[in-house]
Image 1 (cartoon, helix red, strand yellow):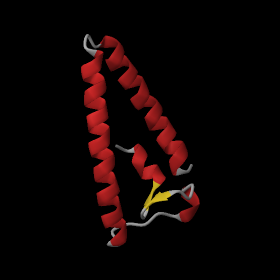
Image 2 (image 1 turned 180 degrees about the vertical axis):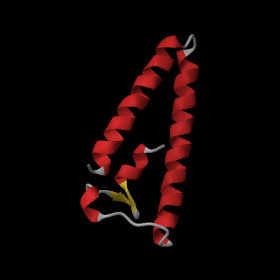
Image 3 (image 1 turned 90 degrees about the vertical axis):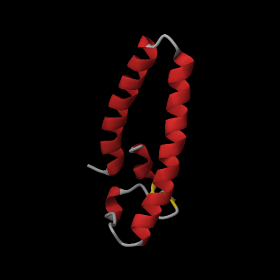
Image 4 (image 1 turned 90 degrees about the horizontal axis):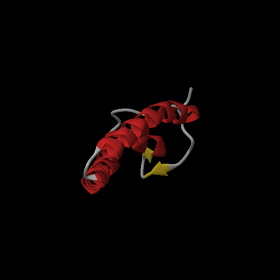
Length: 82
């Protein structure tokens, strides 16, 4: 199993939870604003700290589990976690 397949499982669950929260919300605009602000902050932090941790040698990825796209040193699969 590669990271893309693993991410797909967890992202599907996250999308279902988000859809349920949006459906149950009385103020959908607030839910969407909170989601977008959180997404921007988390992706920004992921860009910064993943690149720092990879550059400093704290961890590395096996090349065969990645699809090849990177943002700096961080593989694109890392951006599914936030």
